[in-house]
Length: 364
Image 1 (cartoon, rainbow, N blue to C red):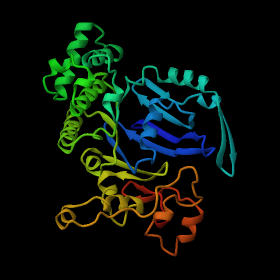
Image 2: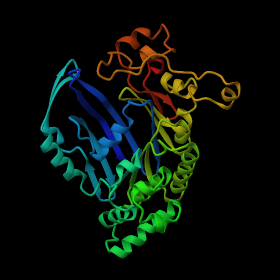
Image 3: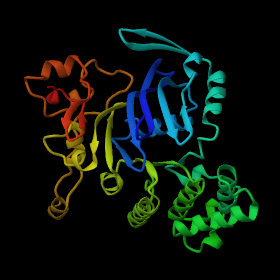
Image 4: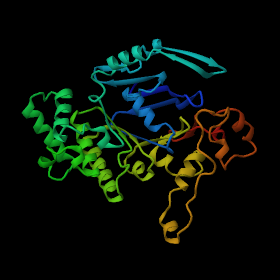
């Protein structure tokens, strides 16, 4: 795995729609790698599979069928583990022309094996900041007690007094207002910004090797969002922790990420250095360019111009076309590639400077 701390290979996470009697292919063949010390940002529209990818890594997908194929390798020091090792024995797939038509899964056996593989990893080696911190924390326990539990479970500070001091240290580190007072507050007694800071403190208190931040600024007002992003930037500079950052906010990604992966319809359509991916020029995937063009700039705000929307509807991940998943919405198709775009899905082509783009326009 060389420098990779986490490597995801051909991950597929499906959900079954009873009303439509078909599979929702939320994550459909995603491959990603995160190197030690870097921040990988994942961007894309709602429903593209960003959060489901993160939850799959954490083993927190419970709906049927959930993760069905793939490999997730985590390597840190003496710990080398495939977090999906042996789980394929609990799944039987029926395929037709390369498409999965039926899944039979022994959910009980799968969950038991997944829990064994995640032991010592989830919450310890890999910690997660969730979208809604108040919904993710225990409403009946004070914030401090929950952080103390994380410290005692996942670090060498197992004594109660020592763990309490570490918890207070992390509350101070995330710059929460009056940390000793907040230590005894319940989540419902905190504002959204304070609760998010407490969630960050809880995640970091476990001293993880990998931090997954899933939409860490969602639901907060603009000023609090800015402060949370400033906090994450400070922590990145001070601690240098490896981070998987998920966001639909290009500004947040541009501020914090070293590399960026763009997802659409359950697939990675572009990946590379943050500067190259967020350039929004000729070297980018048409979907990436459309995402960046939809962000209003200072000139558009002054002139009160209309926002530039992406044409068409978000891809239905039940009825996925044979060709490029973005073809029906793409305004950069040329006659030279139109037939291939409609009939055959492209692979990730090398676009130079370590950048890869899933588009026929970049085929050699």
